[in-house]
Image 1 (cartoon, helix red, strand yellow):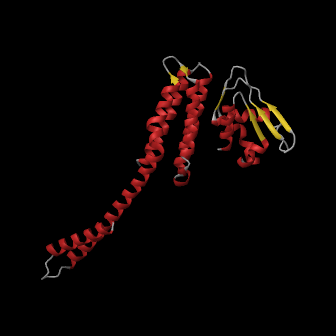
Image 2 (cartoon, one colour):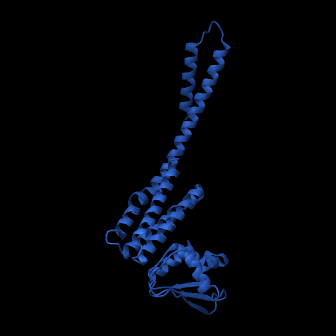
Length: 97
Length: 166
């Protein structure tokens, strides 16, 4: 995989927890779809303010990407960064489940 | 199983001989006796099969769901949400999410034994996860969010009850 493609996500400053399939999909359409590069490693950065992420949000956000890539290949194309290592591990485990 | 069938057959035959008139051959009694014998055998086979099925289901419940549903889920809710103070414990919510993820893995077996049940369980678990994340987000609508959470938890238990006791 070639260069990195950095995608920094933005959410309302009052929100510290992300939940909901439609909400996740909405943010995929708004913040990721047009920036995602299937020829690069995409580093998706969750802002520091986000402390919790629900399974449903991740399912919504990564639904279309997983249709194209598949779970086994996801880590070649996607790297997650977040406010904590534990949260990052959680998000990845939700994507790969 | 074979022993039970043999016992049933010999008991029925003994009863037929006891109640039949061997000097005057009675076709009606013979036919009724054969029917009674067949019904007895079928009844035994059906009962044994049902018991085996029930035993298998019971084992699945004991091995996979009993501890998570009887102990761990109620404990997670209790530790993570304080309804009186409208507050949540962040660390306990994290553990609650870990528990739910673990439960998702445990119920995967039902994907291959009863996919309908699996889908319903999976949906309920994901919903519970969603509600505990939402409830930790903001203090407004706390009671409403809590009620919504408890409703889904009740759905989960109902779903299990219907599956294992139908």
